[in-house]
Image (cartoon, rainbow, N blue to C red; front, side, top):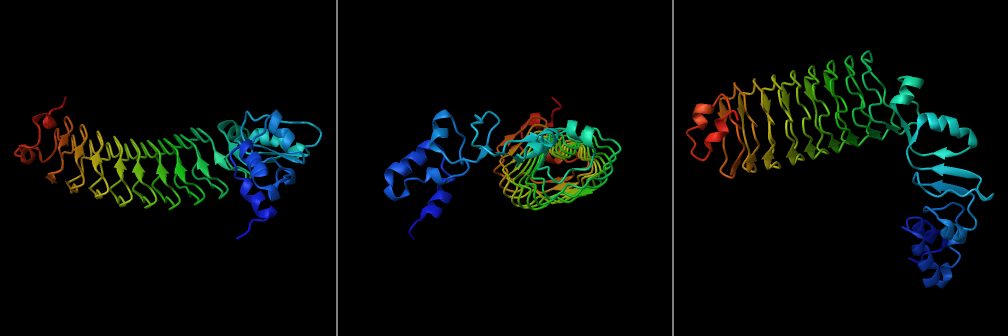
Length: 334
């Protein structure tokens, strides 16, 4: 296939810096003048590179600290870095285009709980401590939910997460104590640390196969959660992941996992049995501590690292103590 002017222009939009453009102009004679065809800057510019893009009419600002040129030839700006909603409203009269508008806690307090359609992301603590908020509609324009976004929304009962979102931030729904269930779409690839911590009314939750890791304290304190299905895509269960899930009766641990984190199942007082796959080679500190109802647990031979207190006050303590492979400090409190 022979590349023409249009094809090479499209390709060069993905160049990293001005040197790539210069090398093309100097290296391939028939593509000389490629830079002059651009009516916008495909890369951030400085005083030197600005002189090479002579026909720019629309100026793209990719980063907050990019150099901006007001030389009389620019008619419009396109801003790609995150901009607060209030700033967007203030500056849009100038005719500029904003590609990444963020709704912040300050915006929410000023403009309300309805997320504007122009918004692309929800910022840190955006709906923090909205205790009377019972539900919210997240438009499909949203691609990111920030850390602690819905932290302590005590009356939150339901939420629909659109498939445009790929990550749930740290402590995103922490202390949403009225949340009973939530559907996580297959677009989610990461569930942040403490995401559902202290969601004490959460009874059921699905984890899609797109997720590879359950973060630290992910379901810590979800005292109403009775069961959970862990897909084979999960390769890591974080520390304190199911800490104090006192209603958890069953859980499947996939062979894709090789370690159970510190305090992972501590105080899971309703857990009666658990099957540990042979892929596990380490049980973290206090992992099954205070699991008083646990009467059946297998210890595969690949496990060589046993954390301190991992079986302290475990329901099957007497049976486990017969296993000479298990160090005695596994049954100690400290």
